[in-house]
Length: 86
Image 1 (cartoon, rainbow, N blue to C red):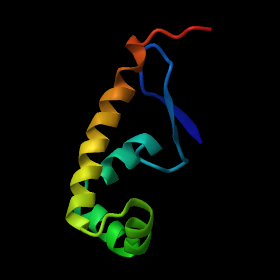
Image 2 (spheres, helix red, strand yellow; image 1 turned 90 degrees about the horizontal axis):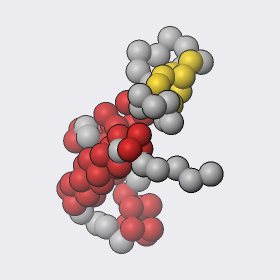
Image 3 (tube, rainbow, N blue to C red; image 1 turned 120 degrees about the horizontal axis):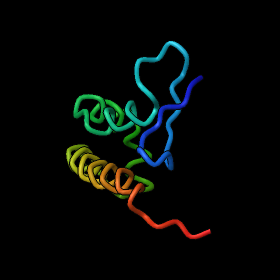
Image 4 (tube, one colour; image 1 turned 90 degrees about the vertical axis):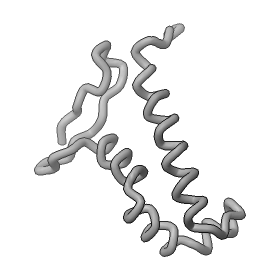
C-alpha cells in the first residue's frame, strides 16, 4: 500500500493499493461519474435507494450522484486553500 499526495500542501492523501493503477479517491470519483456503473449499482440496490432515500427513479439517482460528485470533488480540491485552526 502507498499513499498518493492529492493536494500540494500535503493536507490530503489517498491510498493506492499494491498493484493498483489508481488511488482509491480517483477510483471512487470515476465510479461516481460513470453512468453505466451507477445504473448497475442503483438497480442492484434499488430497495435501499427507495427505503432510505425515497428515490424510485434510477435516472434521478444517477443525476443526483453525478452532481454531488462534482461538488464534492471541488470541495476536496479546495482543501489546500482552507485555513486549519489547531
